[in-house]
Amino acid sequence: MSFSADPQVIKNIAHDFITHYENRVVEGATVKGKAMFVCSSRPIAYELYKNILSLRPEWGEVKIAADGVELSEKEQKEIKPIECLKMVMTRGKDDDADLYKLLGTKEDRKELDRQFKNEKSNFKIAIVVDMWLTGFDVPFLDTMYIYKPIQRHNLIQTISRVNRKFEGKNKGLVVDYIGIKKQLNLALAQYGKADAQNIEDIEQSIVVVKDQLDLLNKLFHKFDSSKYFHGLPVEQLRCLNESAEFVQLTQELEKRFMYIVKRLKSAYDICSGSGVFNDAERDHIHFYLAVRAIIYKLTKGVAPDAAQMNNKVRQLLQDAIESEGVEEIFKLGDDKETEIDIFSDDYMAKIDKIKLPNTKIKLLQKLLGKAIDDIKRINKITGIDFSKRLQFIVDKYNERKENDVLRSEVLEEFTDEIIDLYYALKKEKDSFKDLGIDFEEKAFYDILKALAIKYDFVYPEDKLIHLAQEVKEVVDDKAKYTDWSKRDDIKAELKVDLIILLAENDYPPIDRDEVYKEIFEQAENFKKYHK
Image (tube, rainbow, N blue to C red; front, side, top):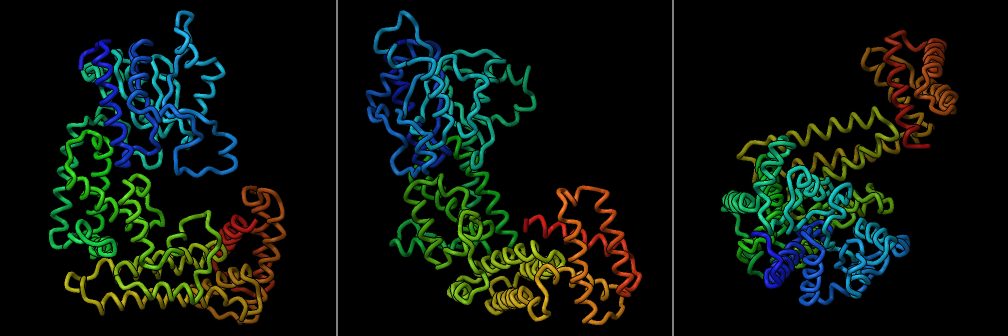
């Protein structure tokens, strides 16, 4: 579109902007709903503002946050009541009274700056002319609309406002209402050749989305997903979980699916507001995003795309996750959750209820991985040993023969192996009590015993327990100093004291450096997590 100040053109742009912006919000293609509209002049900015408000008067209502957004006590103090749509410009002495009042004072503009940078503020859309185009960083700002001729270097700086990194944001989107592509190409050639490969226009993104959809439909050609699109709610939930189970049949299939959907989402975030996709295509896109989110939840503990789906699919996804009865397991990845006893019988009872074998194995793997990480914080050598044992089972599961992929007895065997390892770890966790020592002393006991096995010598059990207690006393004596693990003088003293202690207790003169290294790393690891 060429540049024009004609009122009808501005009206058409306002209508197009609203449609595009709302589509992105509904489709979950914008991380926080923040957008910036760059206008060529103050009169055009004001005209656009009035046209938008005439179509969406609710965007001019003063609110603390959008409906449904929960705020903490701190956020309620920081976030001020404000409109969704604001102009950010300086006042002019010739402005009419309404415009003059709308633009506010210098202090008002500072507050606009603070509120736009708050992801939960109701202030979502900023109309600007010259302000905020350089040196203004809002990482979650991901959409910019341009109706202003901008030359090379300034253009690079301007579009960089939407190119900052933020979790869940793959790329920023620039909507061009004036035809800046030629200037952009010249600017990239002159100033940002390295950035040229990161520029992807909407037409390219549409092609990518359609290509990835085609690939995903081919991956799923043997799976009946019709119940998700046409079934009852309970059938939709079951289909989502069964779809995730299907994707996990092999590691190769899972990796391929996750990569393709990631590429699909990255492109769809750019072109979702274009209006070129029909309902069926959009439904399939959100279906694949939901399946990816379930698998991500199983493996990572979080569903990164959940907040960026439309409301219907987001609720389906949550229901699908909860329908398997493992809500507490999913909370393992949430540091905000209170501590859960993952070794309780109740926990395993929840696992036993899961009927989908590959999903069950993934959950057990996650559960055991969490338990091993907790053990590592107390007893590093034991944690590493269990990590290796778990990895051995996982590798066998991932490398199973094609004929065994669907055999229930093979999957049950892997499930049993992981459960056996789980109970072995549970037993190991409390084994220090049987020895009459505390869990930190047990870590040093395990180091000394492992070295005895490694170098094939016998050392009496009672002396091993006593020596482990003595080692802890030596370590505690040095660890009382600030930054003890960083100070060479204290580390040297610790090494000498350990060598003397080992000699006094007739611990065979194996590689003393190795003994020191293992004990020091265990002590450093333990003190790090138990201050």
